[in-house]
Length: 206
Image (cartoon, rainbow, N blue to C red):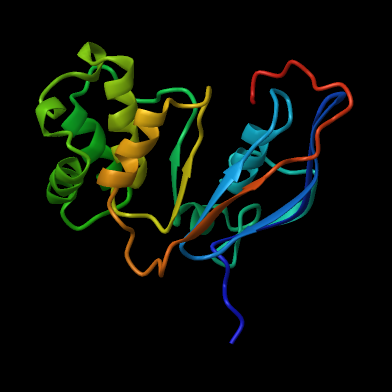
């Protein structure tokens, strides 16, 4: 039986006006695999991520998430994805718990409150749950956003980062991050580098 890959990207391209943001990018992600997408500013990393998530139309190629075409069956593909964007995207007037519960409800979990509390315990967020996100530090908001992206344990988790993290911030998620169900054994991480353009544009989506 042929395995249905969590993510299969085949030769996608995307142009914004005169800017060729993504040029013939292909990659695949298997169950239990951790993949890093590397490249300089303007290489098309965010555009590739947005294409996988079905957030923007692509000009060519195809994207499938667990067999669902991210272009034609976008909602079905998105049901398998938890996305943490580069820009912190918490609702500042809600508490940390309310933010996570909101996303649990959007995922139509049977018990959103219990799911949020369970994840908060695994990510050591309990001291922050009753505080409004506007009163949290930037790092604390990122931790809340991580919980929002992973509540319900979606089988595909996409975390977009900016500057390289310090070693301590790399080690902490490895200790506390909950394992996703039925993901199989973890395989060594690998990295994919989009084709760099000759003159990388200064583009806001990088």
